[in-house]
Length: 56
Image: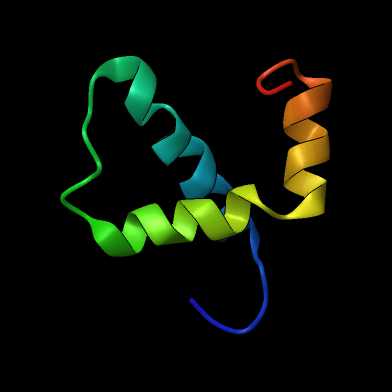
């Protein structure tokens, strides 16, 4: 929502990450899709998801 990454950003990424597993299609929300791409590319997010076995 602002210039700094907050716990709300992390939680929104987590919740929207469940969409694929629950059959929710986010393609109708292009800004949300772009947000997920930006957050998902953050080095700390990649490291955490890799450590949890969510990505390879």
